[in-house]
Length: 285
Image (cartoon, rainbow, N blue to C red):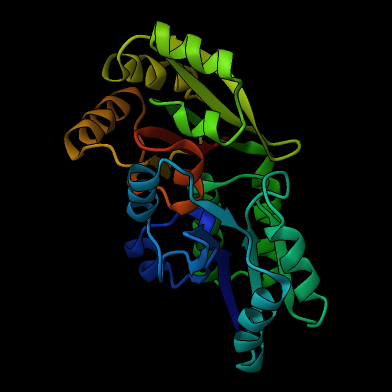
C-alpha cells in the first residue's frame, strides 16, 4: 500500500496563505496572549493585531507554544485518516513547541517531529522543500533525512528598524536601547544553527531605507554556494514599494528561480516589532 504522508508545521514557520494552499501544508497554531486572553495564531490573531495591541497599551503581546494537548489533538486528526505525519517545529532554542510536539508524538507510531533549529521564513523554506519532495514521490524516511541535512545549511539574517520590542522583551539592555536610539543604529540578527538561538550580528548606522540596501548586499556577498530555487524575503509590515525594491536588488545580485515576499507571522512580529526585514535561503550540501 502506498504511504500517505502529510506535511505539517507550527504557525511560526511563516508561510504565506498562498504557499500553504499550494503545498497543502497543515498548520498547528501558536498561541497569542493579549489582554489576559489566549488567541489562536492566524485563526484568531494576526501580526497587525499584535502591533495594534502595542500601540493601544504600550505592552507587548506574548506568543506561546502549542501545548502537548494541542499537538496531540492536531496529530490525531491525521493519524486517524491513515497519514504518516512529518511535523516541523519552531527551534527548540527559542520555544517549547518542539518539546511539546515530541511529547505528543510519543502516543503515535507515524508522527515524526523535526526541530527546525530556526524560525520564520527559513522554517517555511524547509517546509516547502519537504512538500516538494512529497510531490516527487519520496518516502517519509527520505524527506526527513533530506530536511535534517538542510537545517545546518539554512541562512537567515534579520535587520531590525526599531529595537523597542527587543528592549521591552528583555533582549537588550536599557543602555543599549538608549545608545541605539541616539545613534540611529539598526541591528542585524541571525539564527545560530548549532543551537537554534537568535544571535546579534552587525550593527548598521543610518536610516533604514539606506542601510537595508547595504544589509542585502552584504548578506548576499557570496552566492556561489547557494541553492537558488527559492529565496525568502520576510518582513513585519514594510511597504510594498520598499519590498519590491529589495526584490529588484536581490535579483540583480543572484539569479534565483523564485523570490517569495512573505509577511512574517505573530511570533516574529511579537519579538521584533514593525519594520523588520528577513532573508532566508540554504546552501548546497
